[in-house]
Image 1: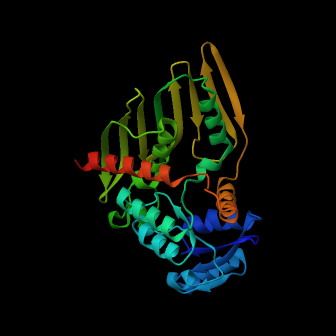
Image 2 (image 1 turned 90 degrees about the horizontal axis):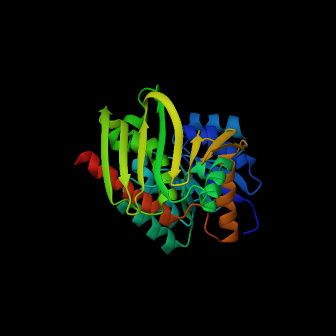
Image 3 (image 1 turned 30 degrees about the vertical axis):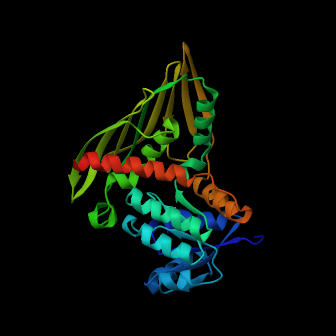
Amino acid sequence: MSHEVRWGILGCARIARLQVVPAILRCDRARLGAVASRDPARLAEFRSLFGEFTGHASYEALLDDPSIDAVYLPLPNSLHCAWAIRAMRAGKHVLCEKPLALDAGEAEEMIRTARECGVLLMEAFMYRYTERLAKVEEILASGVLGPIRSVNSTFRFFLDRVNTIKEQPGLGGGALYDVGCYPLNLIGLVAGAEPEAVAVECTRRHGVNVNLSAVLRYADGLVATLHCGFDAFGRNYSEIVGTDGALLVPDTFLDDAGQLTLLTGTETRQIAVPKSDRYGEEIRDFSTAIQEKRTPRLTLDESLRNMRVLDRIRGALHG
């Protein structure tokens, strides 16, 4: 495929308007081709912001549009599986917002469909495309920390919007799905395995978890803690501790400029990280993967592993 990848957007979600569509417009490998919404006013708003594209009055019409190569799916979590499968069966590559699905069974069905249809499917963990994460991976690969014994990762914010899907259990709401999947993904990146044991505590509001902590114990001696929520002051931070050193990662899941702190023996090093374009790089990688017929950065095996651990956290939560 030599042309720009032509993107279709299923719905006019806030993240599409604020982040993903602008990222598509910034990318020289991508082009905004179509947006689907039942609300003409939302389509008009998108057109005023982003210029010309084909407007479709239904998701089905967008999936039937032969000019569209790839679909970005920012729908509520409960709709990810059904619409991703419909898109892939229509021959579209799919970038699906995190979490990929509600459970591992749905994820397996989505992955199976992607392979049967010969299209790409990726979970949209945009933080994996930052210079901050690249530096974290470089330090881990260097072995300077020694065998990893502890990971502590937190992502929370204060949710001040009312009537949001984030607090609707029927739509896959709750802090674990919304922001807890980020620390879980980081822990999985470090551990490279599934835990032996899981313990969870949480508080609920409107039928969903809004303040949750989980402890994960792994066979190699690693113990990881995950914290997430949206009922209190925002925190976005991680630390990775090995036998020979520790790495402190403020703003773990953001792409702002900042610094990491590496502690080894009696030495403390501050490591600068530049500002990144996490959404732009995500769109570029996925678009290029389509063009080059290769696997994008985040693999389906990793997403499925994380989904299985997410299931275990949810199982401990309801047990």
